[in-house]
Amino acid sequence: MTNNEYHIPVLFHESLDALQIEADDIVIDVTYGGGGHSSEILNRLGEDGILLAFDQDDDALANKIDDERLLFANSNFRFMINFVRYYDIMGVDSILADLGVSSHQFDAGDRGFSIREEGVLDMRMNQNASLTAHQVVNQYPDKELYRVFNSYADLNNVHKVVQTILKARREKLIETTKELVDLMRELVKGNKQTQFLAQVFQAIRIEVNDEMAALMDFLEQSVQVLRPGGRLVVIAYHSIEDRLVKNFMRSGNFTGELNKDGFGRVLKPLNVVNKKPIIPTDEEIVRNPRARSAKMRIAETEEEE
Image 1 (cartoon, rainbow, N blue to C red):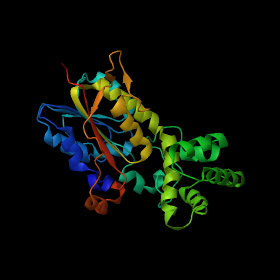
Image 2 (cartoon, rainbow, N blue to C red):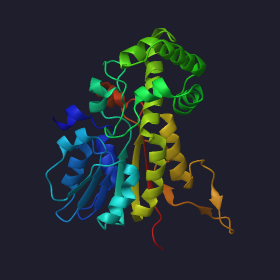
Image 3 (tube, rainbow, N blue to C red):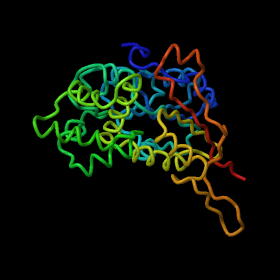
């Protein structure tokens, strides 16, 4: 499987240029996937450079590059600092996070991520994890279903979504993605149907993989791991995760509120590099429609005085 078959990297050149890689840098790629970004990072590193790459999906292991400069962690990036300490590489020069689901995960129907391909209700990025989409859809009480769809999707008919699921599962378990799609398809007609279905699947996927908590853990760890003047580059694909990234880069917390010391100086661990997010060109969106919602943000840790 080639890198492009596994995943088509979004904002590929823009994100790699943003890392500002030098020959002897230590770089972290927390979303290895098909190895597209990692391969080019290695190309830009010299023989003394180090790349630490993360991916919790066992399928990504098939794309592992044979390079002694690559340290590969088959783990969720929320445990980044543990591996950095293990390899004794604190003081990292740059970190790249290309968030979201890989093209491979969407296209592999048996993984349960796709609204177009039939498969079991799974949606686990870590295939060894215990919680599945099947459990969320069929076992969560109504209160928890309301929490999931209110928190992780931009829907104006959450009540109908939850009640439709509750009614259907009383008669029979909802086993496959097709069964869930067929249920949801009745709630929205016309050209907004695909977007609606994607939002429903997004909310369940985020819950299954605890994505927002993992993202917050990662962002907080990034400022501990990066050297002074180190760079953090993050590509987000929906407003929920992008808001967390934006707020953290701006203020060092997830509310976005600026904290000040007794002298009125703003207390924050990062300086925002690009005031507005970098987005794909029209040409890239034509080549790769999944790039449409991508937003890339860049920040740096404070330089030592």
